[in-house]
Image (cartoon, rainbow, N blue to C red; front, side):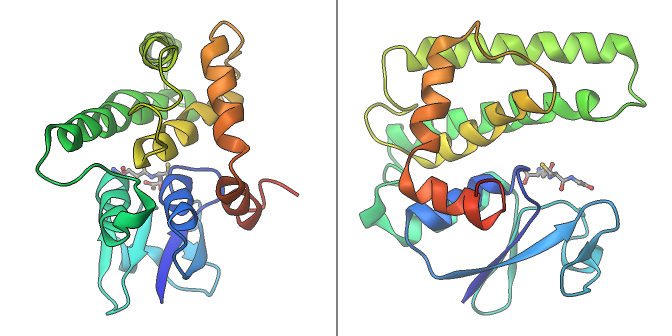
Length: 203
Ligand SMILES: N[C@@H](CCC(=O)N[C@@H](CS)C(=O)NCC(=O)O)C(=O)O
């Protein structure tokens, strides 16, 4: 069985949602990101030399890292779940356009806001980048239920996870009502709820 190394609520929630949405049988192993020790006492730095979650352990024991690689690998195993367009198509490149944007422009812009040692200037600059990305996401979602149109995709698992961090950086989402509705719509999906419960984020 595959295993996801995760930490509740961080970016590993995205592949966790994909595992749940595609109905995989999977195990979870929690990682303490402060000590880098897993819940069974393993040294997480030995599992991922880059030392971050998510890490997916495959059935043959190999490890796959990087959220955008993991979600696409998983979704390609279960085409019937329709979580990604077919490889090699323009639609797939458009999905990757979004995954890359979420990863490089949205996800990593939170770094200065999560690290108190970063100065006020860095926090202000990156908060403004996050707000700009919310404008862009909101613009796309005012026409569509999900990023790629009317179907939930792996990009929604990732975008939902990252926008959810507005709670941790004290950013009021109400100026983006489209995103408020989107977060609600995604969080009400039964398989998303299942993943949130497994991470202890929902009762
Ligand atoms: N490029 C990696 C970044 C993963 C990442 O930033 N993980 C964070 C949690 S959201 C983490 O584990 N940080 C702790 C660390 O890197 O020491 C990916 O997209 O999967």
